Image (cartoon, rainbow, N blue to C red; front, side):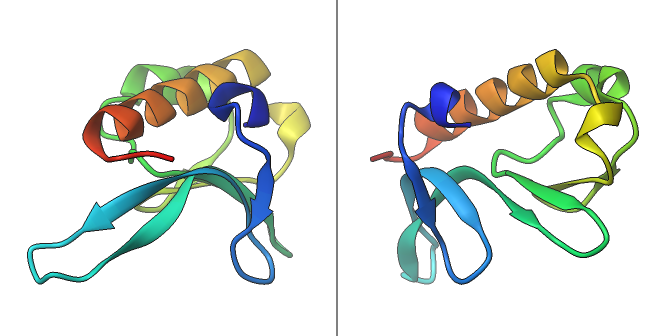
Length: 105
């Protein structure tokens, strides 16, 4: 994640390690900053944050290996069971999308 974002790791709360950041603003006027990508080690699995979502990445997800999805969360039980090259492509594509869509830092 650090090599893709070219940003150092930063803690986002007590348990999430994030890389890079972007600025968002909703129509309601609410705005803030959040990480471009990151991860958190949870009891049941490793959570990888793919902030661009997954709708454009069906082909990569099909090649990734065993996983589950949330809105922007990729849940993986064991990193040894997924294709690391595919994961890097997925992170790279998501970060590129975020940088194109939002002001990034």
